Image (cartoon, rainbow, N blue to C red; front, side, top):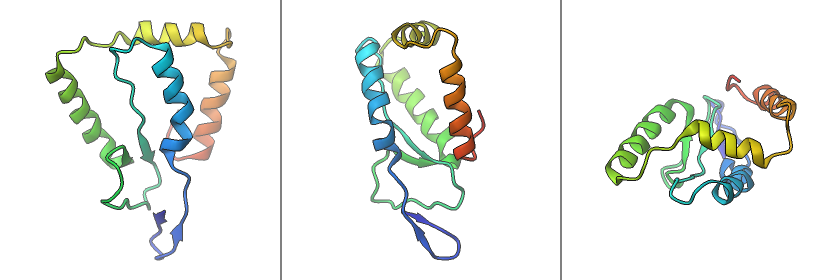
Length: 118
């Protein structure tokens, strides 16, 4: 639920459930030592999240803090750093989109549906 300034509640689909298939794909594609997590980011500035929600739900202003805590946790874990270029290459090889046009179309669709920039 998104609490709008007018006091009205607006029901929203869970970002975690929206991303479940994507997270499963990445977990199945990338090495298991790489910690793939789902995160629900509510980009609408009018949303206020219940403190009872899982920590995997954040608002856009809280995203930077969440990322810093995850970076700190990773640094203390002793796990190897993730080679993002290598991960991206593995993902690209696993998807039938040789020109990148499907990815570009998806990014523009998502950008049109939210206040988050491409």
